Image (cartoon, rainbow, N blue to C red; front, side, top):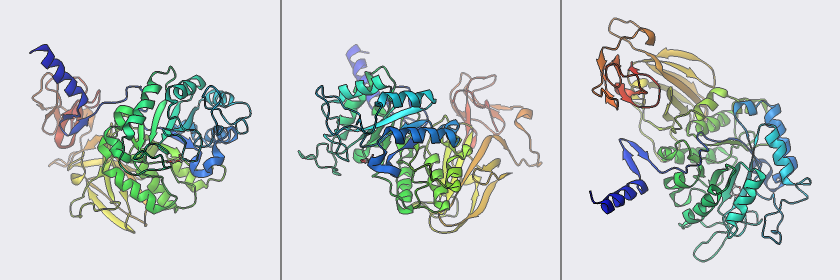
Amino acid sequence: MHSQLLLTLTVSFLSTTVKSGAVDLQPRLDNGLGRTPALGWNSWNAFQCNGGSASAAMTAANQLVNLGLKPLGYVYVNIDDCWSSKQRNSAGQLVPDPSKWPSGIQATINQIHGMGLKFGLYGDAGTMTCAGWPGSKGHETQDAALLSSWGVDYWKYDNCYTQCNGQVPQTCWIARDTKSWYTTFSNALKAQSHPILYSMCSWGLDSVWTWGNAVGNSWRMSGDIQNNWGSVSSIAHTAAGISQYSQPGGFNDLDMLQIGNGGLSEAEERAHFGLWAIAKSPIIIGTNLANIKTSSLNILKNSAIIAINQDSLGKAAKYFTPSGQSGPGNSLYPYWAGPLSDGVVVGIVASNGALNYNVNFASVPGLGSGTYNWKELYSGKTGSGTSISGSLSTHDMAVYKITTGTAVTTGGSGETPTVSTIVPTTTSGNTGGGGGTVAQWGQCGGSGWTGGTKCVSGFTCTYNNAYYSQCV
Ligand code: GAL
């Protein structure tokens, strides 16, 4: 092939969304960060401008440790708006407000790092932050270098006072080229020595999920979350429709949690947490941990649900329609499912009032008819069967982990073989590897294949680094 033509084809291949089967492969920001959604705490929802200080940061850091949240993975202590002085210094640098950081911001960051935690800061792509503090427009390289020199680990970058039809209003909801200014700061961060997770806060404008992967590690897909169920459920509903864009290195950000802030019932807090977890959102606690109720803390500390959120596959759950049910409409739908590296998660949320549910595994994407082991991760109940059923009070949620790897089938003879006794009798046609379909008890990848494969619904094999070589 002519070399110029080859080059052109290669470039267009790399710059276009690549379709591989049903999966969209998209260019990623290659900074190695955010392979699973970030877990931590942020000052804004609880304290707004009053939270931009060393004392707020150190208080939260100590609480993450003392409440046992750090060992569960909540490591980011993120300070939001209002942390700097109102003016840059004569060198054009951002200056931590000395009244809020009496020993300087570096001392606080060092202490937080010394506790095995990470530190995040907030900035803005426009002339000012949303609360009116200095923005980074025109100072992107300088600001990125300053963050790196301090050892900042997480940068939330807001979208206030950016260009809007030649104006710079505080917020502007019309379509604009937000990608250009988010890319400017992405490039500035890439040039720094300290790794900084890039959290884009462009409120879902310009379909950020379609380009966010190439530019940042997460992107807000909505306006600000409010402290009520309507807001939580509407954000989750939007996330269900854009689940395919979340993958390791780049995730839809459903916004900081409202759990603990008093606007949600205990059932709604369970649903908020469960939905954020299965949608693979960053889980950033947004409450004053000094006053948190035990029930709220217990929700945040549900390690089994955190493990779903942190699953290495990084695939977000979305709606599915159980047989006999009508499909999703224009508000939060009860039935969710998503793939895990070692099974499938099914979420059921009583979005429209108390719900009696009965879901046959045959209608769950990634499963199919057969008997599976399940565990409900709020109650801890376990079982094995062809379906799950139960009842939920209004706005409550059940989160089931269905384990495909240990699935047993209801064979005609009623036997329930375990994985260790299975002798593969059928192989896929791909002797050298690759995907394919095999019969029950078939072996992926062909006879003798020992490479990484994964069984998905309908006994289909796909590669996935070291899972099952047999499909049962
Ligand atoms: C908003 C942002 C909030 C918070 C606030 C600070 O634009 O979405 O999460 O950061 O600004 O002023």
